[in-house]
Amino acid sequence: MRTKLVASVFLCMVNQAFADEPNLCRDVETVYFSCASENKVISICLTQGFSPKLGELTYRYGVKDHIELEFSSSYADLNSKYAFGSSSYAKGSTSELAFTLDDFTYTVHQDLHVFRPNSSGVFVERKGKVLAYKTCTHPRQSHKNRLFDLEEVGLLVGNTRGLGTLGE
Image: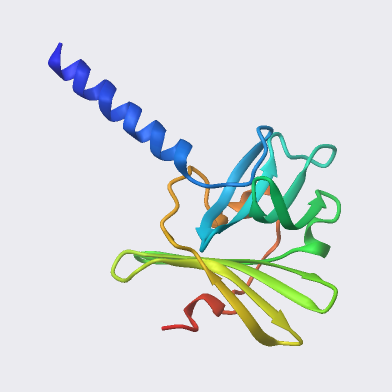
């Protein structure tokens, strides 16, 4: 009986950790990336059941009641609106999802490593020059999917630019 109680408490704690993670995704979307950055949230969301006939891949930045920037693409425009790069190696992976809006390029990166600190955030560039970097407060995201997993939804995989490792 005590074992069942301990297991139940543990499962509740795990579920609470997932529930407390900040994200700007809607109920009909799956979180592929989300983190707090200062007092804002950066999220990459994908409509559940995403297909050529349904849904969008969406970047959101802001807070629940005030989204400051939202950029979406349907399946048909996915590879013309987003650039995706990823690489994996023993003990780590690096992923980047970028899009351009007006003169600005936004690159969300997620670097996961075993032997050094993880890092995640979004770079804002204008004409190839980094203007700002919004770092994730807690770069080890606990949700099931990762930025790296976007390869599975139809994004063509290119090379990463290595922006996430600029600060090292």
